Amino acid sequence: DIQMTQSPSSLSASVGDRVTITCRASQGIKNWLAWYQQKPKKAPKSLIYAASSLQSGVPSRFSGSASGTDFTLTISSLQPEDFATYYCQQYNSYPLTFGGGTKVEIK
Amino acid sequence: EVQLVESGGGLVQPGGSLRLACAASGFRFSDHYMDWVRQAPGKGLEWVGRIRNKANSYTTEYAASVKGRFTISRDDSKNSLFLQMNSLKTEDTAVYYCVRASYSSSPDFDNWGQGNMVTVSS
Image (tube, helix red, strand yellow):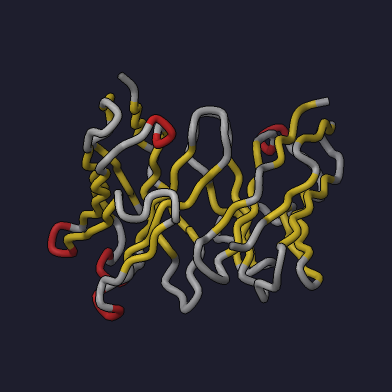
């Protein structure tokens, strides 16, 4: 199975901050990597697919990048509605696997 | 607008069975692979399994933790997805999400249902 290691597991940031979350795959997944946002008691929402493609309707302050087996989600200027938990997920091979999540909290 | 509405959750004893359903609307259901993803209380997301579309013979994939106990099926005529859960264990307690896979050669999860709670307890 492909392990997805997300870091950090949590972070505190202020509105307007630039935030970066990293996800490392235990083996090559090409660019078959997605990012999801989940707010408390809500279903996850898709943000990014294929490592760097923005889902329709997602604000442009969100971006994704890839370098080998390392993937990054960046929020360029954190907004109040961005405080949530973020998950990466590989869909290169079965079983499909998620990272452990990164909780973004208000500083 | 894509809508995925799960039903059928509840409390069941260990060893029991439960069948979840997902009613889909707002898109051409028959074209898409469909998945189930679960989330235990206070924990992260875990993929449960997938069913492909008719063009791919409705074949299925499962996580090792549920293989042989859970079965995914679909009824394209009713735009419905199902998850039959047998031999339930306490560790199956979770919110179960019905998820649409994108229409792509390598599909990600582009739409999620609101989730349905399943509690396995005596």
